[in-house]
Image 1 (cartoon, rainbow, N blue to C red):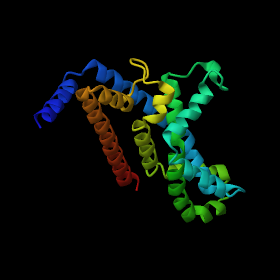
Image 2: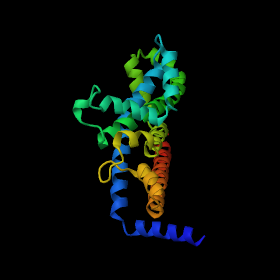
Image 3: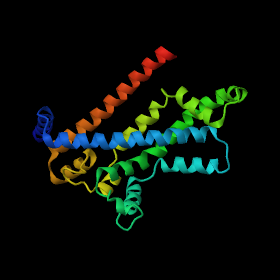
Image 4: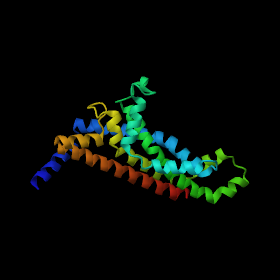
Amino acid sequence: MYGLAATFADAFALLATFDHRAVEIVSLSLQVSVSAVILGTLIGLPLGACLAVGRFPGRSAALVVINGLMGAPSVVVGVVVYLILSRSGPLGGLGMLYTPAAMVAAQTLLVVPLMAAIARQIIEDTWQRYAEEFRAMRFTWLQSVTTLLYDCRHSLLVAVLAGLGRAMSEVGAVMIVGGNIDHATRVMTTAIALETSKGDLPLAIALGIVLVAVILVLNAAAFAMRAWAMRRYG
């Protein structure tokens, strides 16, 4: 029991003194995950809106694929990205493997299906209420998609947060394509796994505390922002 208390005390001491290792790892983690979520937002939300509004051959198959990819094993995604970015792969000449850019690519592939599926459900519910009005106003398909995305922007924060949570908690794919290289591609999740195996529990616990705290703070901020928007705009 004393050992556990001492470990947590050491972890909090690392956080209180802004340990340079922890700061570096946390900073890279935020850069990679936020970049992936931004790309996922630009791809996933419009994709979800198109699936909600569009009626085209193969739509049911597309929905099955998107919903299935929500639970895609991260290590499989990591292997796919690794093969694409390896020297023998189609994008091997870019030299992205074992860089933060490769980690962003892997996380983006993981969050896009999740964000698209959630966005589709949110927007489809709204579309069913306003479809007749849009048709009466002779809205084009693109006008309907853009209008619904804007109208549902507050509710779509759920999709963005889900993507952020998936990105920040990811370990398998970023380990494969990033290599967990010290001072280069080591993020919170991979560092926690490594430091735990090395027996450096204070650093692992400190990073775990930061990871949970960041996710809680972001969720609280998004909840407060959505509540404020609902009160102001209805």
